[in-house]
Image (tube, rainbow, N blue to C red; front, side, top):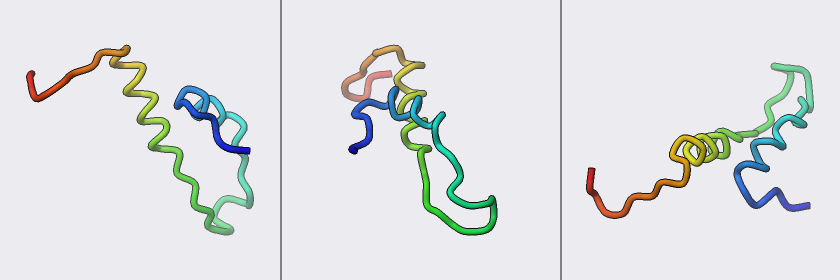
Length: 55
């Protein structure tokens, strides 16, 4: 099943994330930080957009 298409659903889906092994026992790559950052930007900017380099 593919991951959700929008950041809100991807971040909400993190609630269901579970460890696949005991902490420190094995390394598993899992980096949801980009999804969390994208969602944080979406929420804090509330849809504002900028074009060009104006302040």
